[in-house]
Every structure is written in structure tokens, then in C-alpha cells.
Image (spheres, rainbow, N blue to C red):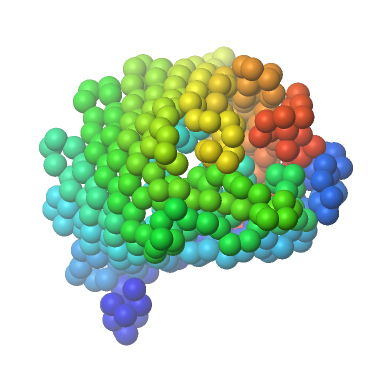
Length: 389
């Protein structure tokens, strides 16, 4: 990308933003597995954002690196380029080349159809932190909707905690991953997405053909480590949202062929907002979603999944104050095992440049079987302070 940049700095409009932050994550219980640490997990992170707009051009250059320095888990100390791309925008089409992040979906509890970027799992379990994905993206905007083609020449492996880390499986995920494709990381993935809106309806339809972002797992020869295996998949997905007065009705569904089998998965529900709660400026959103997944429960046959038959209920309180104060709390309950996850997220601006965030996740009734049982002693509270610039 740098080869395209003119040498003169005066040729650009430059925008620099981003943040630096300090985080302390405290675990409520002692570790469940050997080698894991107890107590707190301090870390530092930084994410600058540089955007360049060449004068007299329809081009844009973006560069967003991210780095974290963790005091307890060496795997969580990592660096990634979230974005580094060139974008050209014309009247009814645009072309992007480089590293980018793309989000698909409408649901709150599970991002089912979101498949372009790999999950940065050492950041958090919620799947919202993503690694940058190398791609070429061509999009056309027409009266009949938007159509995008993605060509992805390089695969990104999922990140996992180390043997010292928390929020991991009983055995450490380690060693070289295995791929169904003989090209391994160099296999070229293809995706298409069509999106449009009609009245109160917003909808998208997507197709993906390539290496799946979710691995399944096998034991190594000594049965001491988990080896991730990335299969070739074909996936068709859709996301639909109906906006009517205070209601948001949401649905995501997919069909996927993987490892000689195929399955369906869905998530759907609603969010209803009570505006100006009790004659105040605050809004209260009430959420309810149901997730179902038809894949095999054997991790050797299919990637493990938490939300396979689960109900999510939650509430989002937005104060609409100068400090942008917001609180989100929700429960996820497994209908079969009754395993429950409680999540609380709160944030508030302290000033024009400082922000305070609180995140907490509690694993209740996790039992001794299922994916969630690996985290039954990993309930935690995270406090984060960030300085934006």
C-alpha cells in the first residue's frame, strides 16, 4: 500500500485517531486446570487509526494496527493489523484492496452469518473482536440494492489462550493446525453478499466458499494437546430485520456443508425500546432471542458451539446523557442443561478524551459436560480505562 503513497505529505488530508488503554480483569474463583493463573490479569492496549485522503482524488488509505501487552498470558500479548487498505469510490461502485474488517448480521446474542473475519478469541469470548482479513472487495450500489464480491487470498488462524491463560479448554490448543485444503493458508476464499431494504425491511443474502473460520479439534498423538482442523465449507446465509415503531424484529439463518455433512442454524428474536423512560431522557430496550444449531456435538466432527438450543434475554439502558452512559445486561440459558451465562457491560465517558468500561461474565450451573463446563471457574469482572485521541 505504501508504494502508492506520494512522497509529499502536503498531498493529503490526514486524520489521526485511536486510543490507548489499561485493563484489569479479575477472576472470581481459582483456576480449574493446571498451569492456569489465579487472581488478576492486567494488560495494556493501543490502537491508533490513521486515514489519508489524497487531494483531488476519490481514494482513501486506512491503517489501524492493534497491540496488547498482557501480564499473565503470553498468548494474549499480541499484535495485529486490523485494517490497512486502499479504497477507491466511484459513482455507483467501489474497490477496496488490503486488510479490512467486515461485519454481517443483526442479532445481539450471536453473530451467526458473520464469516469474513477470523475471531480474535484471546480478546474475549463474545466473538466481537476480529482479526484483519486480507481481501479484494468490489461493491456496486444500484437502485435494486448493493452487491459485493470478496476475494480473500490468505487465511487467518484463530487465536487461543496459552497454558497459563484462563477461558480455555482443559487441554491447550497448540501446535500447527491442519487444513483440508492442500493449499493450507494460501487457499483463495470467495464470498458474495447482496443487501437491500424495502420499506421497514432490511435484508441480506450471502454465500461463502472457502476455509471455515471455526475449527474442529482432534487430540495430538500424545493426547496432551488439541489440534485445530480447518475444513473447506460452503455456506449460504441470510439476515433480516424489520423496524416498526419501537420494535426491531431480527433473524439470521444459515446452511453449511462441512466435513462431509451439512446442517442448519438460526437465531432470531426482537428488541423493543421504551423511549423516554419515566419521563426522562433515558431509553430502555428489552431483548429476547432464541438460538438453535443443528451441527454434531462431537468436536471431532464439527466445530464446538455454545448456543445450540439457548434462550437469550436482556435489557439495554441508554441514558442519552452528555457522558453517553449505557448499560447492557443479559442471560443466556441452555434449554437442555440449564447452564447459564450472565453478561453485564457498562460504559461512560469521563471527559472528552477518557472513557470507563466495565464488563463482567458469570458462568452458572455449568456442570461437568458441554463446552461451557470448561469455563465454570472463569467468571470474571473487567475494568478498562481508555484515552482517546
